[in-house]
Length: 321
Image (cartoon, rainbow, N blue to C red; front, top):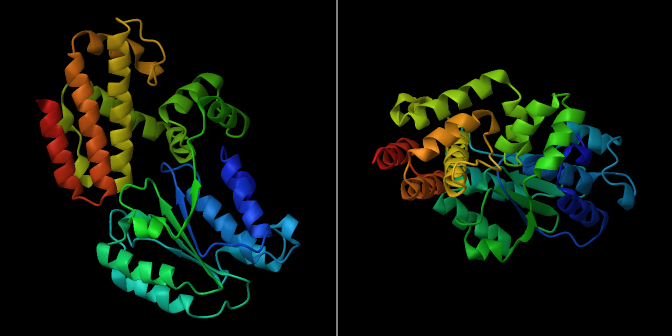
């Protein structure tokens, strides 16, 4: 594990390296950006750098005892906190345990680092408890919170945290990465680069033929107005969000095709160009735009920990109309 594995986030990595090499380290950081762009990997490497035994300019060195423990997931001063299962909340009891530990001195490193993966899953009570810790932070503790967006983050937490933004990788970078490091053929790499919307985790998943087959079935069902033929109830939250992203790319392509009178330029789903053009020709533009708004609303509700079954049921009813 190293910062070199955090692809397409040069600005964020440079900032974190500089912070780890200096003495002015914030007590709280918010890493925010789309899912699958490398926030957690960057946070783990930042924690490793903060405790690295090398000279400041060489942190993390990836070779010292501290770095090796961090890579093995057994560094006593680095803790990853996340929901017990996908879609679950981070409750106040978990945060209280974290708060109690921040009062302790670091065991063997310079900083005790707590990474909250999926911080948007914090309940209101847990967030309130966490705020008290941010107001009176322990001198050798660092809290890193990972968010996909800042819509549900209280201003009181935003104002007490150092913000680090993570961006989707551009399609040229993504294609090059898939060809050079994953050895995909250029045509497949270009397709996946477009579909993944710059999210490297999604791109790696789409390299699996089984995942691509699920995507094909989803698009086929949506294009036939058979939304409820897909069994969304059994999908974990992250897979639901991936499905909504796929739907969003489909309707985006329909809108592009509609606006270009069937020319179909700049499509994301380039492998389904004929289906995009045919569907766009028989679909009302206002209906396409409305579907896009409904999907974005559904994604937002899922980020806000709404009931997934209810969210998908409402979306299906709207799209059917």
